[in-house]
Length: 103
Image (cartoon, rainbow, N blue to C red; front, side, top):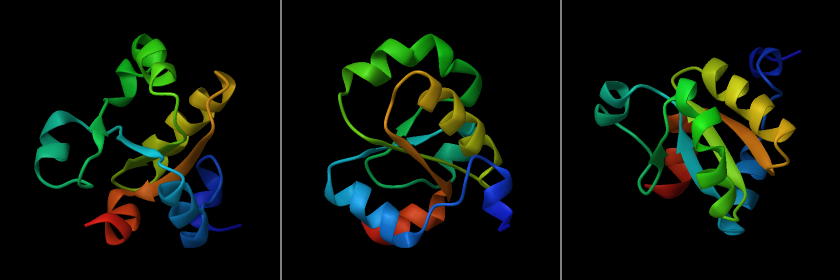
């Protein structure tokens, strides 16, 4: 099992690229300070512990979601929760995994 397999399932680069081509929104679940230090261009910063209170806002986007963070652990937690809410989401792992396809 890969490192990311421990945190909500690993996601291949091909899957990330596919989701981006399909118009997925990138949700960065790190703290505001971490996000300000660097992030995926065009991503939304929704801190992990606020995801449950923002679920209607996320559903209203009506898009696939790629969750990212620093290491893949917090985005894995967000991915698991969002899947339970019926959202089509993948764990992008560290934000740099996704940024290389966007920036």
